[in-house]
Length: 113
Length: 115
Image (cartoon, rainbow over all chains, first blue to last red; front, side, top):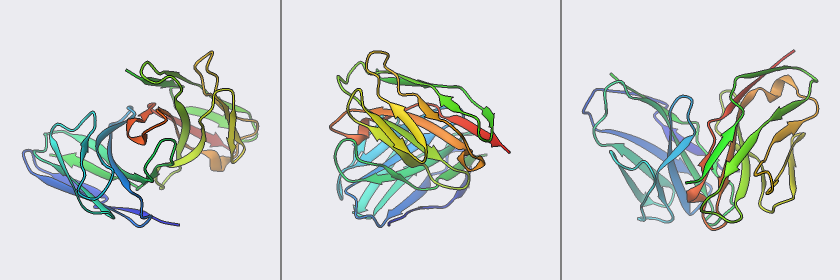
């Protein structure tokens, strides 16, 4: 079996700061995703990538950049952290296609002071 | 747009009792959506519990079952006898056949099973 590793597990930043979240997978999956989860809400897609160097915007891409320089890694940058922002960011990967299982990491919890 | 509505938690049941977590969906842009239940156990990442891609079919895993009902646009999760280890957050989701990138998740239902 494979694993998805997200770093860091907890991230505390200051307002206006640029913050980067990292994700690694060893499933050899083509597609990787970044989701945001706010308390009491469902997961919302920020960015996804169907292959190395590909980037596709999700519903929540404003305020974020992403990078997929290798098949195994997918990073997300919060371009300017918003004060009092708190959310969990989840990385996932899957083979390309519909109805394929998504495999998730444990998440990065962001707090902005 | 597409949406998923599920039982608002938290839900607390006693061990060996039966459970149903309701999930209804609205798929305005997808004629035949795929339906999923994902689960997050304490301290673990979100993982697939079961999926059904054909209307009228039932999916099952770990004693849980869910039937894809296109007439009532529902995909309720049921278990006849829950265990303490079933305590988790459960998410219903729908997606188009062609791309996982368009998955729509519900808000999640936190289940606590007391012994």
